[in-house]
Length: 237
Image (cartoon, rainbow, N blue to C red; front, top):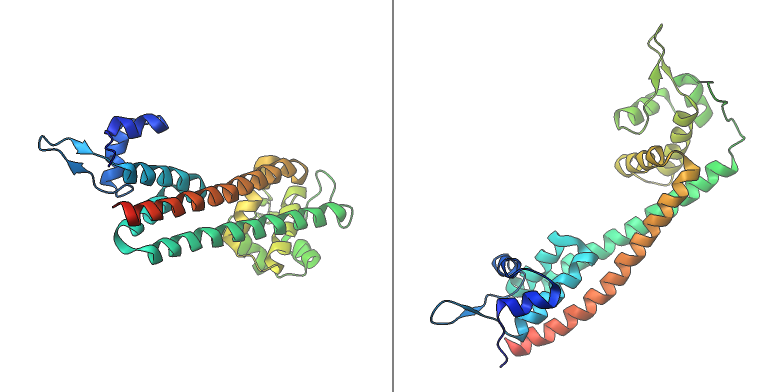
């Protein structure tokens, strides 16, 4: 059996020896045996565990990766699969949300001349509700959820929706009709505001797509590493 020092594991990944000890303490790698003088003794099982844990992080994040390794070391494969399944389900939901946002933005762009407002023109809550065929209470609910943020008329205190508010309301309406809850819609609207509009959002959506693709590929790599570690862990521990 090949024995390794903490420095050997650390050097392979550019880590500190303290990081290796922390990973052991957190259950991300199995407990090390000790020499009579108290020094840790690692083996290829520990090296494989570390490679697996580090491969899991870009696929599932630090917290879930730690859960996967702890489940493997203490609860068995079923606990591992449950966490992995959750990660895949979340990635699929993110892909569906991205697709819905792209369709909604394309729909808004194609209908940009229909019922559009010019710069400086505003609408009341009743006018906007009538345009969207929703109730004023729905628009107030979206405002409470952080989706809309209309200004108030300084003289009357009534809500006034400008062009960007109306764009956000149309997008919220499209996503709501697509079955999306308010929290994800708020996130999308905030991204549009940050990007500066639906045109600038295209770059944000492209970056989102790249991140989802990278995560999917990381999941494939993590699955290969995990399969190798399962064999080493089963036959080498």
